[in-house]
Length: 449
Ligand code: ASP
Image (tube, rainbow, N blue to C red; front, top):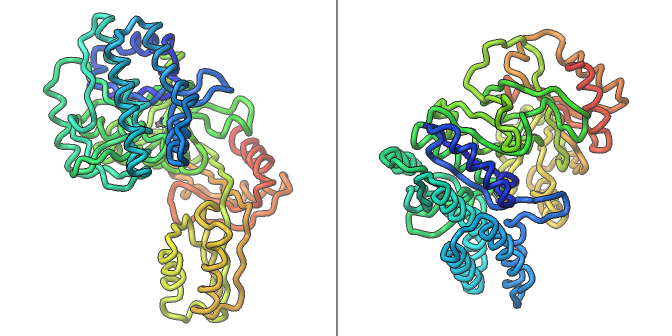
């Protein structure tokens, strides 16, 4: 049994629905289907989820934007019309959207979660109806019926363990099941969404729950590239990656697969295959537990902007019991999560995503650190970028760091920070954002040309 997830571009319009149906029909092991909301049809288009969020915001600001509401409905209506799907399905979609709009007026956060989920929900209803009309036996399955239970963290839900046993029951069903991605329910019955791009998470949870032989994730690229293709032209494609490598890559800028989506599949050792809906015959990229040829080389270069470095120094920091804990406690108190914390004898850097520490919060945090920890220096450096070299077995290979350092020198980019200890599959470099593209290009030449 395969669990197959189709991303937003794969369900963007009726012609994409037809491709999806052909893919499902071509392999009778494709039993459980998870869908995103209709994505962009072209570069200037807007994702349905973004429309729904804007709609929710307009309601919260006092007046529902009818234009956006109509745009959302038009997207579903157009697909339904082009696929000859009955008006009853569209009526069901409209009813849910209207109910969610009312929920937004009562409780913004909870209502917005319900409204956001309408994109995937409507898609699942339409796809299941279309599969039926194409002669395939199929049912729409709501995540509540499937037993996808999650924590009450709106927009950032985490799956609860009991979900997996519930999902296993789906194996009893004979027909093709279509489940909307991106949301689940708390045990109390409240609808909560995962973080953005979270249909990948649903797919992985479902694959783990039904113990699928394979989780296929259909998107709009042929495979995962070894580097961001907007920075390097025609980069090398990756045919096989390990879970750990994919996790590192998707954490820093590889948007092909949600970085939280791997864990459920990984725990059940279910291989994941990234494929292209527009080229289903292509090989795609397999994500597996172990890669046979561990040649010790770098397999990918991930990079992302939007970090800051909170730097503190204090003479004899190494002798001061509990310094690191107290520093991190201040961040915890202020609700800030950090990404990395490389340290020296008398200093410590804490790398944080910039959006976590807006200027107002920065003032509070730096004042508290100065007053409570009596540090000698404290600075906040913004506009930082992280570059990660990724590859299992890389840490066993002599000379990677020196080759990387040479590549940075050729690009004339100063390395502000190096961190390897945190992971055996990656080596991380902190630089100023403006040097990102040239550094990545130089690293690509070094490791892949
Ligand atoms: N539709 C949601 C989003 O745009 C979830 C997803 O596509 O996976 O974030």
